[in-house]
Length: 84
Image 1 (cartoon, rainbow, N blue to C red):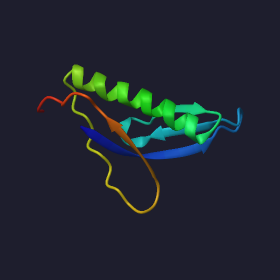
Image 2 (cartoon, one colour; image 1 turned 45 degrees about the vertical axis):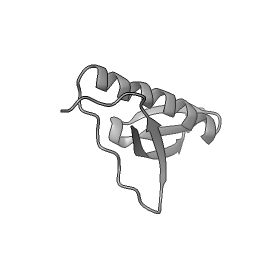
Image 3 (cartoon, rainbow, N blue to C red; image 1 turned 180 degrees about the horizontal axis):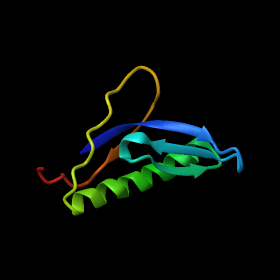
């Protein structure tokens, strides 16, 4: 199952690193020296977050509606969430 969420990118003023966050997932965030690194780290973190939600029986937030603007991150889960 694939979930797609809108990403917000910012630059940390103190470190200069790129911070990528997912507002729909409680602003789950990670960072990197480049946008690519921040997104790769965020993808790994957010996938683990969703898997933990599934394992504990907590509902997974629905995917964000796609628009022509913005950046989105798709997360693939190997297992199917249990019905709510």
